[in-house]
Length: 83
Image 1: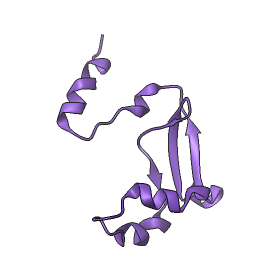
Image 2: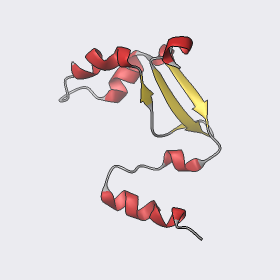
Image 3: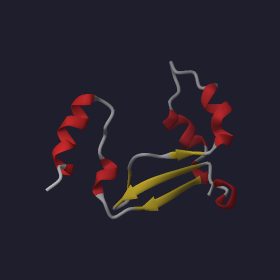
Image 4: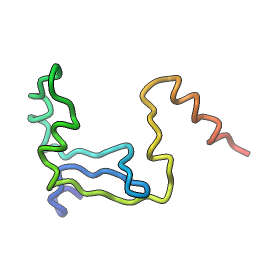
């Protein structure tokens, strides 16, 4: 995908809001590794390359969920119980 689109990042969206997971091109690897974590974040990098971001609209709002901690995973777990 990255070789044909030229994008450096692909970000899913739901109703215009950016979600997870985002996909990053390997071309960003060195730049990511060089980030100064005391004053730069991945968001800093994405702003720097805003013209090379491809957004893909999804119909599921679950892409907006933050699942960074076990507590956040537990909070959303019930949504996927088999019936």
